[in-house]
Length: 463
Image 1: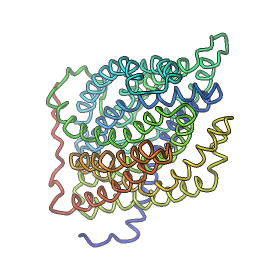
Image 2: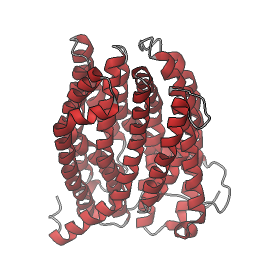
Image 3: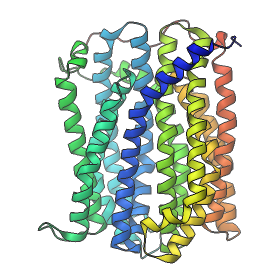
């Protein structure tokens, strides 16, 4: 292992990571607040609407995790090219990533169109199915926009420019708040559409976000040297395959973790609308907390990738990862404290239903317990992405979440009748196992002998 970095240099790395991560965290919080707005609007409309949005959101994000994670191949690829001084190759790589995003968006649109027919076979409570189907019918129109948005965002992240993530995240929130209310309740001359209106409002917001992002990249002087939209490049299957080799395991890994939470929601949906509404409240709060370590993990991906590209060796790579870990532990400890001290007050914001609020408050106490392991596992996974080490973490995620977390949660929650609390104990177990194994994997992959000697990205300037 490399000797420890001088304290001043490490403090500088912490500051750099914090500055890079702050807009990412803000952007992710904006995304989380979009979910918060959805849930508050739905909860105020009725418990049935909230339950339907909970199930619909789960079915929307379960497949969406794969393209979101797959496109995460772009930040480390861009940051390694940037660190190696090969900025002229970023534009062609970006154009191929756009083709990949479009293809993934089209595929998911078809899948989500068919997903409404799976509600009954999955055993979703009959009273929840109509509102869940209405929400899915509305939000599916935003899928292509969302995959393109991820591509644009990840390009900026890889170049250490994360303010657009913050700006367009909160811009989307400002659009959704009035539009979601109007289409859900019926206002400003629009008819009441309930959960379907909320899904449609989300889709409109996604298209406005991506259109604004494209205009920004096309006009900003910062990106002019990259010539992002200089010409039309047809699909280059070699470059797309290279992105898929790195990104698809990331997509599967993200889906493994996200799917643990989403399938938990769907299983709770078999119990009844009260339980699923309480779970949705608690998981939305936990998701807001998760946005902080998620943003720090993305910043760590970029810093580790840049260290690899710049040839800083094991010491530089580990310094970048350790800086992220210090920040994650501090923020997660704060989140856990808030959840422990204000669980009942937070739950009361979402619903007037006292039974749903009481159950949600008890689940938030369990959410406090997994804040630290959740932060460690996502930070370790982000550092591994910076090394483009993505295949082994995929298998680690499969074991931790689906070999440990889901069987335990289903056994306790459904088998023993512990309900949502039993399912959440499974979440804690899965995240804890992932934290240990991901951390050990990074320690191995960041050894001097394991690091690549040169950036592995090979991209041509040709069409």
